[in-house]
Length: 244
Image (tube, rainbow, N blue to C red):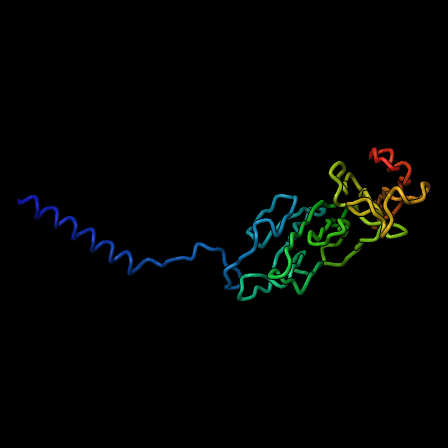
């Protein structure tokens, strides 16, 4: 048989195969979609410091064992608009809403929402939420909920004089969960060492500027206690700040 005829015969078979493939193959959009919308979220927009059992760029599902029962904790963006951005961030446990943040506008703001310290204490699920778009650096809230979605704790201002969780520290984790005790590192200072208009060197040396608080779970409740105080004088010395 003529080699040229063989070549054209093979080419014809390949072309017919490609036509059949193109007419029957269902093309899929490689870009992630949610609620029928192409999602444009940054890969770091939703961060959870615990491994997700199911996840995508907008969702993290964690299966938790609470007293031998399986509970589903979900953090996710919802209510996606045509521009690819969501308007709402929610958290649910067993389908019951325990956290909600509405009116998000990604066209004007950059959001980096951080859920951390996900743990089980007794029959309660605890976690912290940090609003990464908040410039003060003290935007973390402590939550504790039961499996029915009822909040036991929702704490942002932990102590007197605007003492909030210090979530910008590079040296100490702002929360620890050990056994039945949650320990929070709190501060009145922003990340630039200011309390309002006053720099740390201008604050009265005996003023308490930072503190550690504990939440101990006992008999079905969390008992809050001031564990350690740090004065302005101690803070200046510990951080080797030079005050003229």
